[in-house]
Image (cartoon, rainbow, N blue to C red; front, side, top):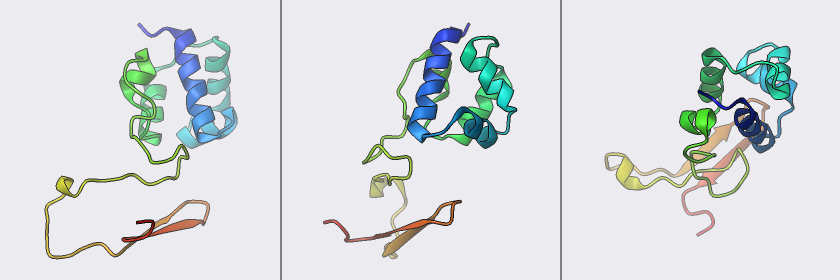
Amino acid sequence: MVNTEEFVQRLEKILKYYGLSASAFADKIAVQRSTISHLLSGRNKPSLEFVLKVVKSFPEVNLYWLLNGKGTFPAVQKETATPHSTETVSSTEYPSNSKSIKKIIIFYEDGSFEAFNKNAGQ
């Protein structure tokens, strides 16, 4: 069984990590704003549907950490503490081929972007 008080603390940690208000968080995971308000106040317990929406919308949130505090948050280790930072990926995770990556561009929903060159910062 989920400890509601501890669940709320973890939920608040997620809001702080992403810099979201309760209403923006509700919009992001497509639930009513009152749902978040009722959870944060301790009035209601989280439903399975709510938990799954959080995990699906935020890849850094580990299901077991959210439910019972086991594991880490964020689940994906990043180079910096910002939600839009890059991850270091080992080349052994992908099959090798004759092509190499020269540049990666990430476009965000707000219209901004980041560009990463292969040799930048080395």
